[in-house]
Image (cartoon, rainbow, N blue to C red; front, side, top):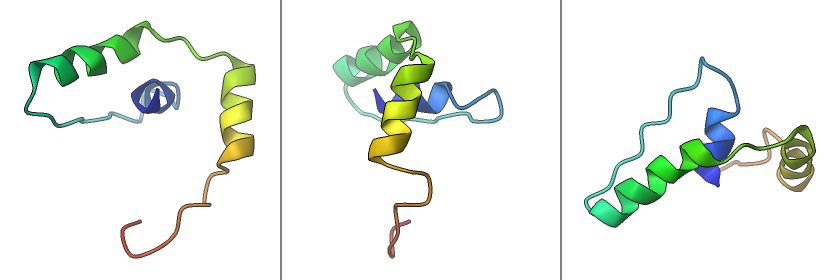
Length: 58
């Protein structure tokens, strides 16, 4: 779902997932099949607003 969200952010965002396992590559490719609605995106924004992640790793 995270990759689907990134893909929904616009053409200026290019996710580069890394993995060593074929099953994870297939799972990542599956994100292309997920179409998030405006309601989905609004709910994600409500739960985790942009800028809410903070700390040394962000």
